[in-house]
Image 1: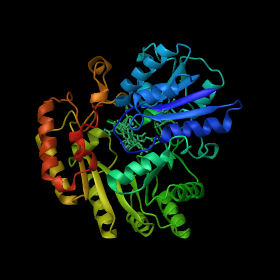
Image 2: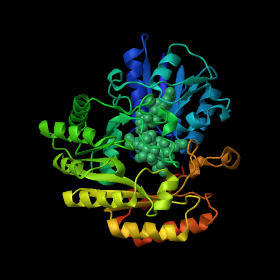
Image 3: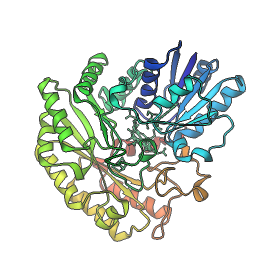
Amino acid sequence: MKVTLIQPYYFNIWESISLAYISSYAKKNYKGKLELNFYQGNFDSDEEIINGAKDSDIVGFSCTSPTFHHGVSLARELKKINPGLHTVFGGHHVSALRELIDEDCIDQIVIGEGEKAFLRILEGDKDRMVYGQAVDFDELPWPDRDLIHNERTVALCQKMINKRIASFQANRVCPFRCRYCSERNITGLFNRKTNPVRTRDIGDLMDEIEFVARKYNLDFFKFIDATFDTSAEFVIAFCEEKIRRNFTLEWECMIHAAVSCKEMFKWLKKANCNQIDVGCESGSPKILRAMRKGTSIEKVIEVFNWAKECGIKRRSFFLLGMPTETREDILMTEKLVENIRPDVVGFTILCPYPGSDFYDHEKFKDIEWEKTDEYSNDFWRTGNFSNLELKEWQKYLTQKFKDNLAWHHKVMNNSPVSK
Ligand code: B12
Ligand code: SF4
């Protein structure tokens, strides 16, 4: 059976870990003969993708909201050329919108974690909606980096940011439930008893990182986990193991302030963690509560101080445009940035992605997601601010802190969302 997996176009420099997992699980468990191919829209042209995929039995698309439109246009084209070809869509966009998806070029929709569901499809499941199931890491092989041509993104990272980087997954299920985030669409809402955080065996995770670092000659690595520090114990155990192996490669991870402790930063430093990325989001306690961020301004300040004392670079994300946010709240955000002085900072505007609490299908069904994201969004406004006013605040803050702007802001002029 010929199967092609596609990540449609989006301007980014990273590998598709999602499809690499779908592939490795299928290769391990599918009993028949399988020929797997992969295309990534920011490397491969539509022509290359269509030519390569048109004689496939099954074509799988991995889509966030901004990439869904391109995925649909490829699927339509492929169906025109080969009406017998079978299309499967998975990822955040279709998981969030499920039965609202009515494109007739889509044969099946996978909701949630896709490894087991895609295997069932390969084995003949024809349901329109195929529900994913949680996979334990001990039954999940390492992501198939050969299939996704990981060497291309490593080389692109080197070209764009002068570092050879690959990314890794350390856990599934985020223990928080921020209202603007749609993470829970895939792995479900955290619940200690019925849907606990699943973390990887640290030895196995380190084995993978060491292997990949050698294979692609990495000089840096990062974690895709939105919350790497699901517990301080996990982070410390990882650092201890990295140090025990005398594996000195520098790295970066996203952490949640609430879970962090000073001890953790000492270990991160010892284990050569070069940068932490923290979703601070707002300098206003009222707004943090409205977001259900699960942390406080005091804790954020503490975390930035600890990381600084330990000599770890600190990157922070801030989000403007919560419905109840006022001018005073944004000024508190400005004050917090001045206080914590992040080494790298980004200011975005709330984007009500499908699956987040702010998505309203009636209002947003016609949004062109391929032209929209949290960096450049033309429609979000609140009772207190018009879209233009939010953009002016974003501009004011990005200009004020321009010496420390995140990479994404710097390339915004090249329009990350336009193809
Ligand atoms: C890491 C990450 C990134 C990295 C990813 C690459 C990397 N190697 O580092 C980068 C920085 C590139 C990135 C960029 C963006 N991201 Co992002 N990102 C995430 C994050 C934190 C984890 C995603 C991840 O890799 N998970 C691990 C993999 C294994 O899980 P997965 O992707 O969900 O895949 C599983 C299922 O979805 C399903 N599946 C996925 N594809 C397919 C395909 C088939 C055929 C099947 C059967 C199943 C299937 O099976 C997979 C395995 O179980 C999530 C938030 C979160 N915690 O989930 C946001 C998230 C996915 N990102 C999001 C967004 C919006 C973006 C950007 C638009 C942001 C921006 N403005 O730049 C871009 C879009 C990039 C793109 N290609 O579409 C949103 C998506 C919301 C939505 N409704 O679409 C999320 C949910 C965060 C949020 N705001 O809520 N992101
Ligand atoms: S901590 Fe991050 S991944 Fe978890 S719910 Fe909040 S924004 Fe989403």
